[in-house]
Image 1: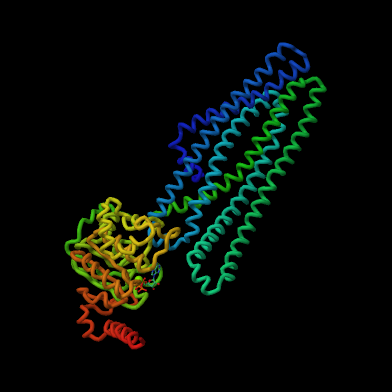
Image 2: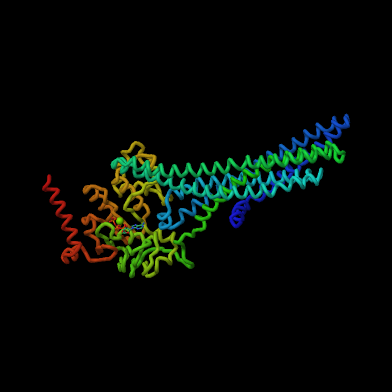
Length: 580
Ligand SMILES: Nc1ncnc2c1ncn2[C@@H]1O[C@H](COP(=O)(O)OP(=O)(O)OP(=O)(O)O)[C@@H](O)[C@H]1O
Ligand SMILES: [Mg+2]
């Protein structure tokens, strides 16, 4: 019931069109009743009494009634379609916005296929339900009211007899509807799973082929595919059962009525006109009733979809502005991690981290893979909220800044460079569409991306990403670096920003990155230690803890983990040289 209220709330903004449609439907309904009623004068006047006057007027009246009815029906359909489609497009928009505002942890928890199926499949199901439901529900109900009125007017005793059959039919519809809803839910779940499998296959196609695991992937797909078949089959069985059952029930009623009504006419208690008008109305009732029984199936599907949609809409985004949050303008003193511990769900990934980064300084995070470097850096833009301790910017807990202003003051180059399926130009300008042409070109130059971009077939207009040109890992990284250059933010986070570059280009990009770092509070994460030598302080992270801290020279002298890592890399370089 609550669900219906919410769906009705979606209709509210379109109440005017909706009221027009309802009025038109009411007209259609009463005119249907009138048509059935007209059978009586036609029968008694023309066929029994052979009245010529009636013969002249009645065909014209019938024509006029149908003309008005058709016009109103057309108008009603148009308005309802408009409202139905509009509601759905509103809802789709809302859902998309909601999903992109959810925290990373929510999105990582949910499968991509399931979220996609909410926006596409479920919204479509709901659209079917809303349009069909409101249209036939209201129109058919009005028509039924008109016809039921005629039925009772002509012969209330016969009518009551017919009505007795209805509750039985209603119970039947209800039972079938519940079954449908259950299968539809299972079917949608399987549909979501199957989209996830396809997505994963496409993303990981290189791995699949390299490991010859097509057979294995096919089996995975087949399992879900089989489930979808099974549930759809069950839905079909229920759906297929519902109309023949209704028909049988109808036939039973009609047979009874012909027997009883015919007896009355033969006895002279009723005229043939009355009986046929009654019968016409009853026959006309059958169609909207049958449609309503089908609409019920659609509505059940739609309600199940609405349930799933609202499940997402009701999940509150967990990273939001605190009340009284202020804007972060600039970083004057620096960033400080105070006893920070963090977990993605189970087990601490970061433990008692204490770091202070004076404004304008460059600090580096190094350490073995999986140590928690990326995690630590992603706490600063509040991709996740921490469980213990606090992170302060200029002495203020960063949760007291508005999320927007905080993120707008941070330029981030991710470990895995991501490009949108768009032109290189727009990829660099992403999020900074107010910058000038020169800004973008000089950002590209600073990131050492300009030269290879202009050599591409369409230069800056080359479309990259999913459906465009594929770039090398190093080229992608340089475009992401250009994006960071353009953002011109006081805090800079470089997570393995130059890891895919060869030594030569890395040196070049490094030089311009040093330019970029000037005057900015920078966190640089790197495995290649040559890139962090100049940092004012280096933190070595292992298993979520800081195990060493100091400048390059201090750490080398101390002879701990850092000097071990450094020597290992140095040795590798020497071995490479000897190998040649
Ligand atoms: N989104 C996530 N959800 C759950 N666990 C995660 C997530 N991201 C990372 N982890 C876990 O947290 C730990 C630290 O990962 P993190 O990516 O921070 O390491 P890292 O030091 O950046 O490693 P690398 O040098 O390989 O990039 C790992 O054990 C990893 O499995
Ligand atoms: Mg990492």
